[in-house]
Image (cartoon, rainbow, N blue to C red; front, side):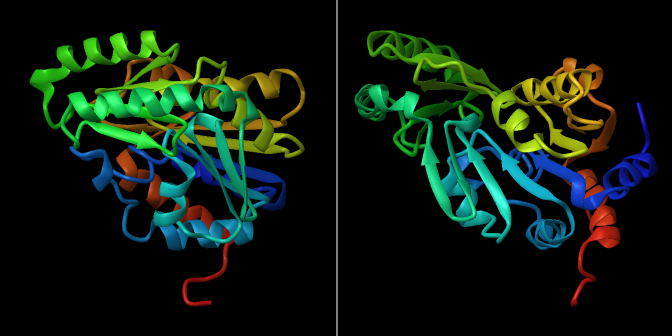
Length: 264
């Protein structure tokens, strides 16, 4: 485990040869009761804009749809990978993984059934590619929500992804954050990823493998701690920060060294 000073040094030693990848929920944005209310911390967009001008690459890799990320973090030079990599936007060019296309009709049908059977605040359609059911606001209904998700998902041939107080129905393809992580750090000397949940563990592992394979000189894995952090997080990272505010403070220090001055 390294400290914040060593982390900043690693990310600023070769800024143009450094790729910085960031999770959204729980990392750039605090966890909220209702998924649609999530917003990045005040000041996060400005810091990311400065980092995008000072580092070789800055990207957000999230379970959120690209459209959501683009609305709340509309920053030139920041690549957006949504739905764990099933869609992405780079330099304004939007693409969808072609493997999801055969399942879009099934996703639409499942979404319609879920919306008919569950409260609107529980069901989050995601760009027509997947649909997530959240029970943070209604924890007493978690069992019923999981049963309904399993029934409908199985009937439509969709896979289930369990996340923090939620379950996502999505195309049954092999996809997680390791794919975007591998692609985004390729060709760079230093690769960094910041995340807070189990969905981020594949990205941390991908960076470690890239170092072992000689494709990356150094990996910097930043864990964003919370009371809900999985126990595996600490073993998977190189440095721990205290919540989204701690991550923003760390990123601000990096931006102060490699980005344009505030007001510049």
